[in-house]
Image (cartoon, rainbow, N blue to C red; front, side):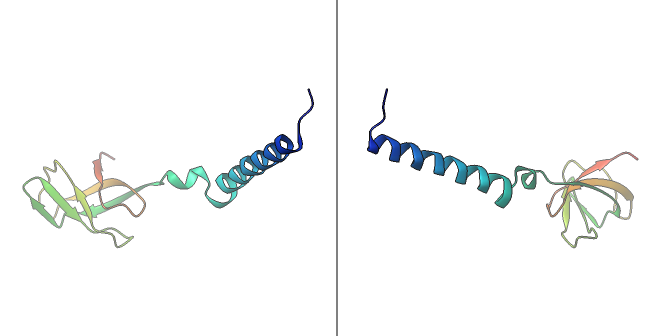
Length: 92
């Protein structure tokens, strides 16, 4: 089977699109940038309003913790994704 010049051009164009997609997905926007690093930090509970606690972390992004039973002033260890505004309390 022999390809016409239009089919060859289409095949080359399609191949170029696939190669450009691979280059963009691996070099420009790697998949692992979507996976945030887990950070563990020891913090003090600043406020507890109806089961939602608020803490301040070293990255200067205030964190909220839902279903929180801790009191203001308690020191806890939390886990959060880098630059995210929510966290969970973990047991050391």
